Length: 184
Image 1: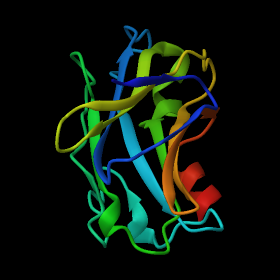
Image 2: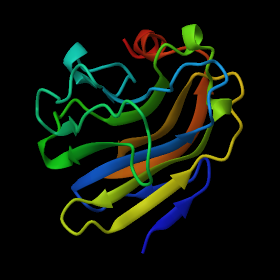
Image 3: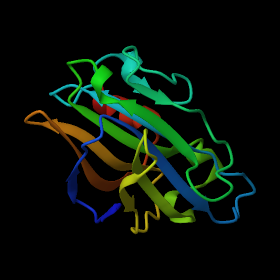
Image 4: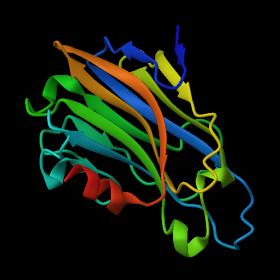
């Protein structure tokens, strides 16, 4: 049975192979532009720095060098129910230098389109077992990010040999480049 997390809550991940599902709905845009939200994963070392440029997994780099993380592709509309984007993870293949996997969603061209996460609702991140499709945990973001254009949904980190998930829910005014600057 799935565990529903609150912001800041942590939970063990006991399945070595799982899928991260991310979902959201957007309000009708008053800016005249469609929304394009993008999920990205930063594979970080113990110093919270990107292991290498290839360890940023997003719509232009769908697979990590060790093939432990694979983005299934960019959803340009976010229409429909369920996951809008998915990222497959196999921790047994993860580079030994990886100690954290940061899960971020950004709004593509947010500034030019005058869009922010205040116009996004029903956002969630869930982790489900790749073998059984059983949902392990879910975190529904309930904050109103009225000026933020990027949100760190959660992070998966290794502590004393055990992988855990933390529900983060922290917004940032900026985009993918701003996260890259933070983690490089």
